[in-house]
Amino acid sequence: MKYLHTMIRVGDLDRSLRFYTEGLGFRVLSRQDYPEDRFSLVFLEAPDDSGRGTQIELTHNWDTASYTKGDGYGHVAYSVDSIDQIQERLKKTGYDLSWGPGLTPNGKTKMAFVDDPDGYEIELLEYR
Image 1 (cartoon, rainbow, N blue to C red):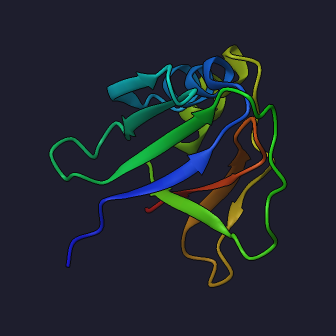
Image 2 (image 1 turned 180 degrees about the vertical axis):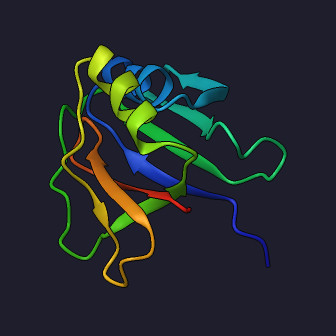
Image 3 (image 1 turned 180 degrees about the horizontal axis):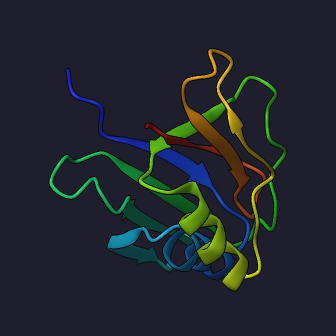
């Protein structure tokens, strides 16, 4: 078994693409628009995940502007070289961390959280 992707439904595809590409540095792998069914699918890859196959799928249903996030969802997590550099890039695009930076509960790893435009949490872990 191999992990492939996490799908996230988004209310504003352009806003979400700006967040993930300009704010977090993700790369668009593919985009398919389905006018007859009124939805779009965009697959993204994190900067250091090239070739691994793990992706985020943004699904935009054209007639839905927002979703109610369930309380069972937690977050996706990424290992990063520098939380400070990511925070600087996020601020340039109008976003910021929603928590941190701070330390993980065991005190060994620097961590932070950022919420995407639809409120989904992304954990950033900077291993020392």
